[in-house]
Image (cartoon, rainbow, N blue to C red; front, side, top):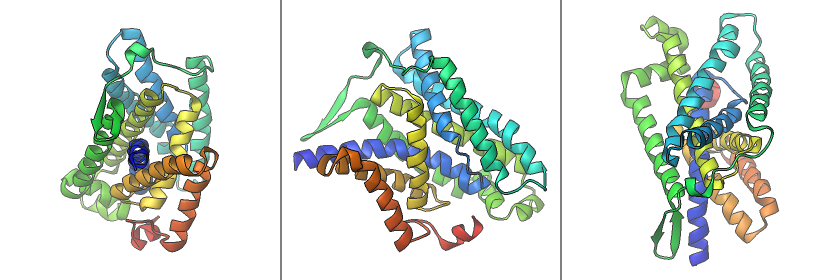
Length: 297
């Protein structure tokens, strides 16, 4: 039983990192209708930026977190202004144009990461990493894992309240639901797009830094893995609901860890993808999603 509880805690910690990415990705996907496949690269750049700040400035590891958030937000905004905003202004642009553009951005950003890292994995020195742990009975949770869990809970709750209780948050939802009506009501779409892009980029960059600090292995695969699991989390949890995206991330993380422990590490991804298929068959709108969200998508 102690082994199960320990692995469950490990799964929640992993799922919390997926949840943070999924909430950021889902915010952009649901509110702007933008399937940006380059967001995995935002996470990698966030992790690399956090590592660079710690290594170059000799500051403690917590500084890597705001640095990663800033890097993710800046990259997200620049990419939106360069690659997506011109397409929004062109009525003749096809529905596939933003996806194709995001693929090109993905390749470009991954090439940038290769240049920055000399195509080698990036590691923190052992004395730079958090070493503390919290023991709850027979379960031990590393300091960085506990921080990941707490941040995932706070960010999800805070963003949900912001979107449903704050005037600007409701404006974001209004633009995603009925853009023309929102404009007639005095909402400025450009302000909504910029704010959404910044928040989404910051959360994705944060997830990259947390995974990098936890695994101490920053590669291109870090962002690619987060994008795959984050995308699945949004679909599993429910399109258009930040709580659903977080729940989906937690389910995938717990499923992966328990599958690796009790089935086979080689089949962890197979089982998590199988979970996606089962949920899509039984509840196409996701666990917390609504059919209305699917129609709008």
